[in-house]
Length: 131
Image 1 (tube, rainbow, N blue to C red):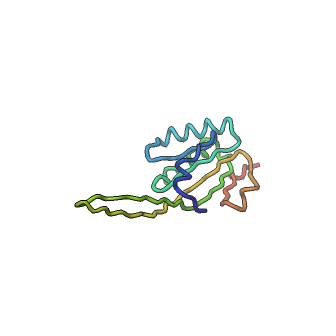
Image 2 (image 1 turned 135 degrees about the vertical axis):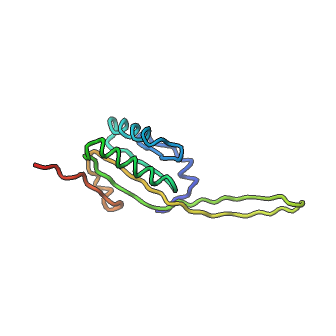
Image 3 (image 1 turned 135 degrees about the horizontal axis):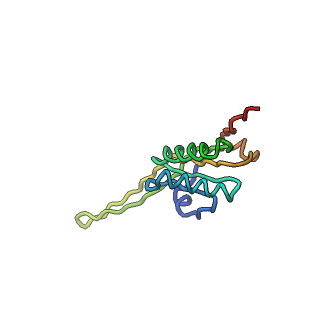
């Protein structure tokens, strides 16, 4: 899965989506996730680059708070970004382009199984309940 970074940044955030950023507080993100799971059948947690670890923490805490009863679907990929710049030095202009790619993770936590995702993602079922 590869996306253009600009499409990720400018796309609208859906009501059941959480985008993890460097400024986001883990406890607040967990609470947002729990609140969204009360009204939506599944939530989507998205993180890019250095905040992927924070997103994984949020996912694991939400699952624990929900008693481990959630289905987890993971997608990993990269997003590309292009940065163009121009320098003015001694009346001569220099310019350049920097192409970069960052890892991205998209995690769906669902109350019910989503069979359509099972071939496209890695899947972690809820733990079996003792009988």
